[in-house]
Amino acid sequence: MNRLVGEESILWEACPSIALTMWVSIPSGDREIDVLRNALSNLVAVESPRFAVSSRLQILPLYSFSPPLPMGCVYVGAGCDDYDLKPSVWLNAFSFMNDVPAPLVEFKQFSYARPDLLNWLSPLASASVLVCDCFTHKCICHACVLLEMLNELSSVKK
Image (spheres, rainbow, N blue to C red):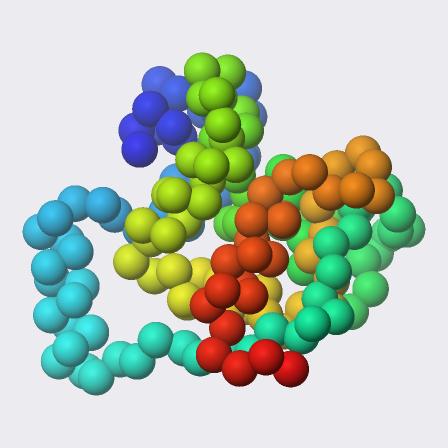
């Protein structure tokens, strides 16, 4: 993980705001922390959130909007000063690494390994639009992976 967003990573040098957002939003992969987190969750009976995803949830590129984004839109990109948007916690940090041959595959594998996966995804389920940074209406970024994961993990289809 340190290679991806740590202090000496390419992302940290290229765009500290994105690296910092990713760093604070990624749960620790440390085994001891994982054991403690699971023990605490069991002790206080924390249940994973259940969510339903609308079949109408769509992905649209940021350029198709005028500032500010309408209600129901959730931005999942790298940030944009024109819209006063900060980097998203759902951003694919692997897309900033030149030595990763399949950044979408890495993003999906990493996402499924998150111990807080359902908590991380659940805010997206109530959106009407996921807003990405693609330059065409045919989205080819991690927003497609997020939508796929939402559909796979949805407890109820609307």
